[in-house]
Amino acid sequence: YKRQDINRVNGRNGGFYLNKRDFSQEEISTLLSTFSSSKYVSTRSVMHIKDKLKPLLGKNDLSKLKQLIYVPNRVSQSNTTLFKNIEEVSSAIISQNILSFKYKEWIINLDDGRVAYNLKNKHDNLNYKVYPLAIVYFEQNYYFIAIDIIDETIKHFRLDKAVELAMLEPATKEIKRLGTRFDPAKYSSSVFDMFSGYEKTIRLKFHKDMIGVMIEKFGEDLIILKDKDKDYFHTAQSIRVSNKFFAWLLSYNGQIRLVSPEAVVQDFKEYILRNLDIYE
Image (cartoon, rainbow, N blue to C red; front, side, top):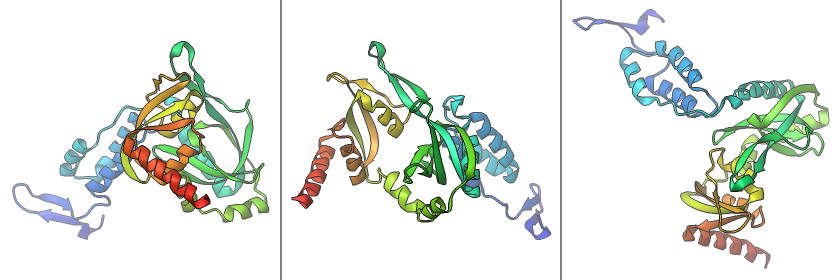
């Protein structure tokens, strides 16, 4: 710090104080809140980061910080490879190289009427080859957006479900040219921002084949209840209802159904009729 940054105060409680600091208490609180709310950052890591940031604050601000920061329970250590995956994908993006990896999917077990699920390699250890374009953080999950080398289409993958990542040869000029047309803001808006409407708690009914889809969309702590109809389950979720949410429901051809509340069901019907009128 420079001399002009230090202020001297006389009197009983006097002393030397910094006129300004690199970070305010509010800024550090925001940083720590972001870390502590992430399900991928361990409690130990949050506390380690907090200890590193402490010297940047005065005594009064430190006492406020203790009251503001709460560290919730964490998921299992199976996600500790996430940060290594972020580093691998980031390196491939910077170097403009092809990335190879295997992808995991949800395997559902309905034995004894109970729902159990775990991750297993998808498509018999099939290796994906992609040209990564960007990393996106959405609803406490990390995704990477990439061009599939086989069909040259843009796809997105959950970073914590990618395994055995390996950087391959540099991308061809043609693939790089496709990448220059990619608009991350436009893609993220169309794919990820589907719950940008009014907030409501809804009940969804879905076929057993859709359990993996539901876990992918609403998280691993999804509460699933057996429905009276055979092979069906239901759950209640708080979401933001929007046209994109309605379009998402329609994309599963009735295998995921909106049950209640009636007001949202009515909005869904009106959405269908509006689109039907266009083609009549």
